Image (cartoon, rainbow, N blue to C red; front, side, top):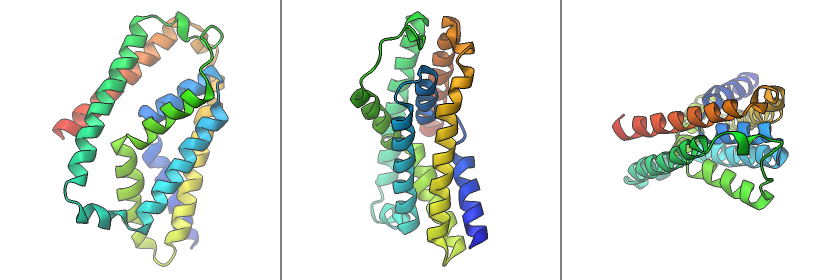
Length: 200
C-alpha cells in the first residue's frame, strides 16, 4: 500500500511537470496573482477525475471505440496550434499590457472557462492521466485506489506550487520584455507539441 501511494504521487508529478498549455496558464495566472486558488482547484480536481477514470478502466473504452485515439490526436493538434498562435499574437502586441500591475483584471468566469478548455481539450492530459496512469495503476492491485488518491495529491501539490510559487518570479516579470519572452516560449512549446502529435 505504501509503495502504491508513493509511486502514485511521484508518477503524477513527473508526468505533469513539463510546461504545457495547462501549466503555462497556471504559471501566467500565478504571475498575475489573479484567481490563482480557483485555477489550482480546477486543475487539481480535473486531474483527480481523469486519474480516477483511468484507474477505473478508460483504456477499455478506448479499445471499444477505435477512432477515439485519432479524434483526440487531431483535435489536440488543432487546439494547440490555435492556442500557440494566440500566444504569439500577445507577444507581438508587446508585454506592457501583460504586466500584472498594469493589465486589466479578467473576470473569474472567463479565467475558469479558459482553464477548463486548456485542461479538457488537451490530448496530453488524457494520455498522461487516463491512459498511462490507468495502466500503471494495474501493477499495484489491489491498492489502485491508494495509487489514484496519491496521484491526485501529487497533482494538487504541483499546481499549488506552480501557481502560488510563481509570485517569487514577480520581480523578473515586472519587465514587459520578460512577459513577451514567456508568451513566445509558450507559443513555441505549444506548436512543438502539436508537431509531435501530428508527425509522431
